[in-house]
Length: 234
View 1 (cartoon, one colour):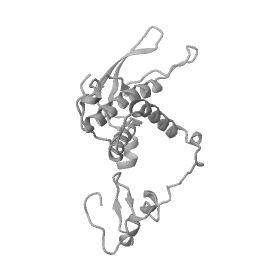
View 2: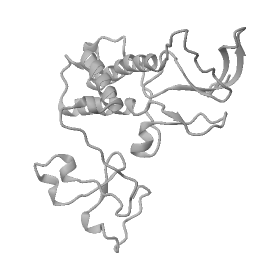
View 3: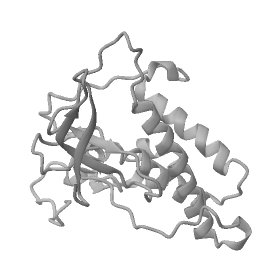
View 4: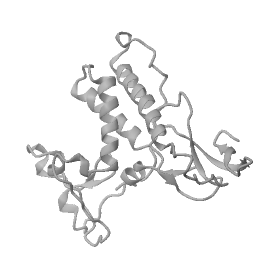
């Protein structure tokens, strides 16, 4: 379906009126569309019958402490969202647009390199698990320094997204930086390591990545200076 092909008339799922949602997940269509059920109830996910590698894990209701890392990301989103857009007035459609763009930001973060090739700067992101590819976003002019009352509805949403991105990405990068006491030996960087570089004024969903191509150890054999290759060059 993702390639535009029709489902075979002999397929067993044809009677389910399958369709792909905006994340590329196959769901059931049909007569429950106008019911009062939540979206997941009206359109359940269709899974392969022979799939043995899926194990569903559920946490108790109203128990975010069970969620671990993903709940920490939700907490970070709520923290910045409340401070940036908490007093703003949005319609349902405007709020949905805003939260969808913030969702893209959270799912664009790099997790791990896709290969050990020094020339490969591709990384695995949460978006790969959702839509099978990295997030792409249109670069908009920065509106952070503009007064809100001078902006259109779309520009107000864009300004909120850019402000949340600037705040969240900074706190995210700070959280990745390990600060161990001097009594603990940190592992030295190695040639070929993927690094995430802090860069000011990057647009939402854009991360500056690089590969270590040269090391400059100090007298104590600790590496504090390196050469990094990025998509812009060395």
